[in-house]
Length: 117
Length: 114
Image 1 (cartoon, each protein chain N blue to C red):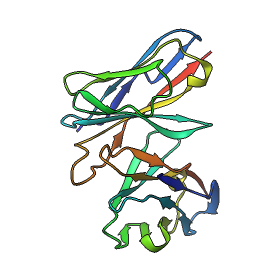
Image 2 (image 1 turned 180 degrees about the vertical axis):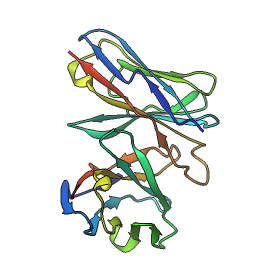
Image 3 (image 1 turned 60 degrees about the horizontal axis):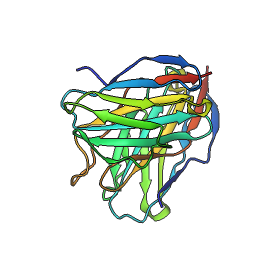
Image 4 (image 1 turned 135 degrees about the vertical axis):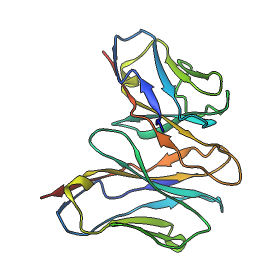
């Protein structure tokens, strides 16, 4: 079946502009995660969704970052007033579920490369 | 606090050599999961293996094998008879708690030369 998809694959924006990154999880996966991969910070967790709720937002670096998920499927990560340090690859992952008696495998999308000029 | 350490930043080998990638983790939880992912030059993270803390059996999958030792908090990955296609960055990750978020190591870049 189809894997996790993300769009756009590349995004170049000017400092101060807002950007939206989209993630389509694997069909039927209730858990969705956003991570960021940058040279200085490696791979870091941003936010987790179970269904449409986000019980863990602890990784969001500032209040300029927000995310939502609708219909238990598509998620959008929004970065307001982008800064140069926001430049990174933003990765989305989904798993069948989470938080239960076992941990399911997270499958990753191809990522969105964000460049802030 | 949870942490994953991959001390080897970069490893270079010649094709057909065996290579071991080290992973050391820290957690106070008794229930946790360990993962390895491969990130080829294309950039997408590819799942390789998941292991829970109660299963210390080693696992072999083709040329890949994993050695999990709770006594040393290590989960090492060995590639036997390496091939050029194995060239990638390999990440070890730890998952704990209710959200199952992944805590990644810094990765090991493996270069396999023909």
